[in-house]
Amino acid sequence: MPLALLALAVGAFGIGTTEFAMMGLLPDVAGDLGVSIPSAGHLVSAYALGVVIGAPLLAAATARMPRRTVLIALMGLFVAGNALSALAPDENWLLAARFLSGLPHGAFFGVGAVVATGLVAPERKARSVSLMFLGLTVANIAGVPAATLVGQHLGWRATFLGVSAIGVAAVVALFLLIPAVPGPVSGGGLRGELAALRPLPVWLALGTTVAGFAALFSAYSYIAPMLTEAAGYTEGSVTPLLALFGVGATAGNLLGGRLADQAMRATLFGGLASLVVVLAAFPLLMRTQWSAAAAVLLLGTAAFVTGSPLQLMVMEKAAAAPSLASSANQAAFNLANAGGAWVGGLTLAAGLGASAPALAGAALAVLGTAVAGTAYAVDLRRAKRPAERARVVATHVPGRPEALRR
Image 1 (tube, rainbow, N blue to C red):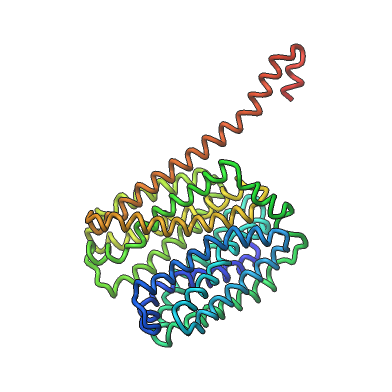
Image 2: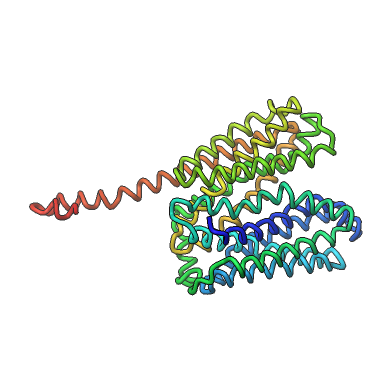
């Protein structure tokens, strides 16, 4: 694998750290700025909103720029957003800075996926994407706990300064390691990029991402109460268990990349099916502490097996605009985050028990499998049309069937 993938992984590590570290810093931020924790929670939503808005807009707006230039510019915007977060004098400033930090997130992964797949042979595309995503999953193991620890001891502003430093390191790595290939990310411009997103298969692929990862976030958003109320863990034990989720996510990401290069669609359906099984078994697995720990590990593994195949599927469905489609897929991930948390919260509000969000997640994973199946059926139908037309024409032109079939 090219060393250039390391530069993409460093950027992904910084993005993953800043996205998830805020959850652990909410009490410190709320206390320092004099706001309630629910009010500080809007900072998480502001970042996600930036991702959803920025992913397609920035990918489309930079379609005619060289790819390395785009990646460096996006990471520069990321550095600026985190530096402004560290300097925020009040909540409104921090909200705006978090929104700014989220804007380059989706476009960076979108353009990065295009660059990663272009650096390797066709039979290694999925693995190249998984290695870029490796930075994101490792952030859950090392980056987020380290950022939380720094915030607790040196203040939350020091965390954002540290993340800015990671962003600067990523800029240097991108400049040194990414090939300066001439030419734009896409030759079609904004109009061509948007036109490539119109076909139904593209939206079915994006819908699979939303439903599949909403299944994950329906359960993961409420994993702490599941572990404490159902499995009997103390609150202090939750953080190491979340790192265990990161280990599972990293393993699933690497496994999914390797398997998808052999059979992308089979890997996708296998990952979604395993996610259904794991989430459906959560109420049973949460009865003992050792099985609950295994459930957290398996949840990360099953969910992230589908990461690379989903990214590649969206890019293939919109081959004329892979950067925009790939970036839109990142927006779909964040919609899944918000939607899954909302669905899981409904089950808790209804008093269905601490493990109910996992069962809701299993239902969402079934929905994701159905959407993926619909996409597959549409592909089969479209593949049959040229052969059917050839047979019809051959039937109506006597004496020339063989020539027409050729």
